[in-house]
Length: 143
Image 1: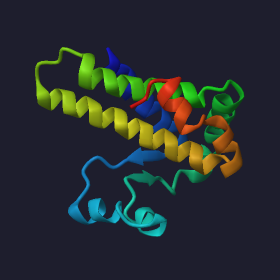
Image 2: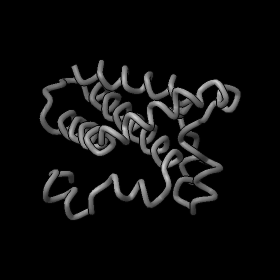
Image 3: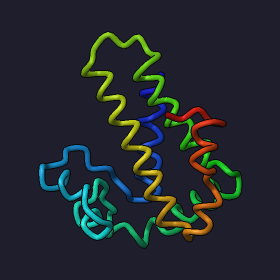
C-alpha cells in the first residue's frame, strides 16, 4: 500500500510544481553530486520544467502555502523517511529488486519535495520548518 501513496504523491508534486526526479543517473551525474553546490546544480537529480513555469506559478504557490500554513512540511518528510525505513526493515517483500525500487521511488519523492520546499522558502523559513538533527534522531527516531 505504501507504493501507491508514494507514486500518487510523486505525481501530485510533479504536476503542481514541474519538478521531476531523474531516475537513471549516468556516471558523470553521480560523480557531480559529490561536488560543491554549483556542480550539484549542474548535475542535478531533478529536472524543473521551465516551459510550464508560468502555468505552474499558481499551483506551486498554493501547494507551498498549504504545506506551510498547515505545518505539513515536517510530517511529510517524516512520513516518507519512516516509509523508507519500513520498506527496508519491516516489510516482508520477498523480491529484493522490488524492495529497492520502492526505496528509490520514496527517496525520489523526498528529493522532489525537499527541492520544492527549498526553492520556495527563504532559508530562515525553511530552517524554522525543520527540527534540529538531535530531535530528528531522538524524538522522531530517524536513523
